[in-house]
Image (cartoon, rainbow, N blue to C red; front, side, top):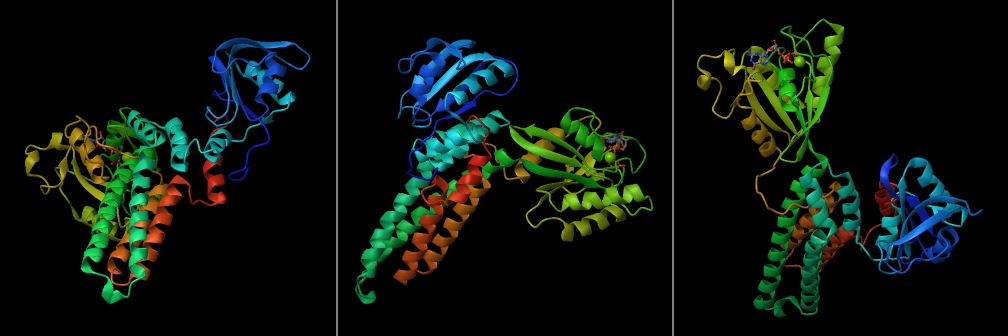
Length: 452
Ligand SMILES: Nc1nc2c(ncn2[C@@H]2O[C@H](COP(=O)(O)OP(=O)(O)OP(=O)(O)O)[C@@H](O)[C@H]2O)c(=O)[nH]1
Ligand SMILES: [Mg+2]
C-alpha cells in the first residue's frame, strides 16, 4: 500500500499473543468487513455494540462463540471498517476462526499492517505509530508512561510547534530576501534573530527530554572491570539480587562475560561482569580478558573496581592507563573501592569522588545505583516529562539543531539563512512522517508484531 491510497483488501490476524488465555481476539480491517462478518458470523453487528455471535466456517460448522464488535470507518483504529471477534483464547480455536475469515476472503495481515493503515489514513502520525510498538515493548512502568505520552501526541505536538515557528520565521525571511541588504532594517533583523533563538531553545529542550527517554527505551550498557578478585562478580550478583556469576577467592574465576539486565528507578541497565584484567598464560582466561576489553569498548558506563584496603596499585594504574585508549569517547567512568567491610578506616581510602562499597554487606550500593543513573545522564525528577524517543528521532533532532546553529552564523546572508531553516524543518518533519521515505516506513512497521 502506498501513501494516500485506499487499501483494497481486508486483512485478518489474531491480535492477542499465541497461547492459552481467557479471551483471544481476531481482528479484521478493510472494505470487506461487512461482507466477511455476514459470512462468518451470520450478521453484521450494530456499530460499536457488543454482540454475542457464533463464528462458523464456510460449511456452517460452529468454531467458537464470543463477542463481536464492529467499528465502521473512519472511527476505528485503522480508519477502515474494523471487526473484532473476542473468542476463547486457545491456539487452535483462534486459528480456526482466523482461517474462517481467510476462507471467506480476508488476507493474513503482515506485522504492523494495522498500524501502517492507521498511519496512511491519518489516524496516527509516524512518531505515534512508533509509540504503539514502544508501549507494547515497554519493559518498565516509566517507559510505558513515556510511550503513552508519545502515543497521545504530546511528542508530535512539541515537534509541530517548532515546525510552525520555523515556518513563520521562513515566511519572514522570504520577505527580507526581496529587499536589498541595506534596506532591511534592524528591527526586522532583530525580530528574525529573536525568533531563531526561541526555536533553538525549544529544540534543546525537546532534545534533552528525548535523550532521557532514549535511555528508558534502550537502557544503559554498564561494564564492571578491574583486576582479578576485587569483587566484580560479587557486585554483579548484588545488583542482580541473585547469584548469577560464580564467586570464589581464586583470582581469575570469571572467564567469560556474564550479562544481567536490571532496572533502577525504571531505567533498564544491561550490566556485564568481565574477567579480571591481567596478563596470563592461561589460554581460556586470556580469551576472557580479550572479551572484557572488547566489551569495555562498547560501554556507556564503566565501573572501575579496586580493593579498598589495597588502594590503587601498579596493576590498577596500568588498567586505568589503558582505559584512556580503549573506552569509547562518551563513556562515563565510576571508580569504586570494594570490600570496605575489611577496612578499619574506610573513609580514608581513595580520592573523594570515588565510591566505597561492600559487595558482601551491601554497604554503599544505593549510592552506586544513583551514581550509575547520574553517569548515564538520568537526573532524578518525579513528574518531569520524558519522551520515549528512538535513535531515529534523536538523529533528526540533532540534524535540525545543527542546521539552526549554521543559520545563526549565516544571519547576514538571508539566502543561506533561509536554506538552513528549510533543512531544519525537513529534518523535523521526518519525525512525524510528513517527510519520510517509503523504505524507512517499511523498516519501521516490519518491526511490529502481527496483529498490531
Ligand atoms: N570481605 C569481602 N569480601 C568480598 C567482597 N566482595 C567480594 N569479596 C570476596 O572476594 C573474592 C573475589 O570475589 P569475586 O566477586 O569473585 O571477584 P572478581 O573480581 O569477580 O574476581 P575474578 O572473576 O577472578 O576477576 C571472593 O572470595 C568474594 O567473596 C566484599 O565486599 N567484602
Ligand atoms: Mg568474577
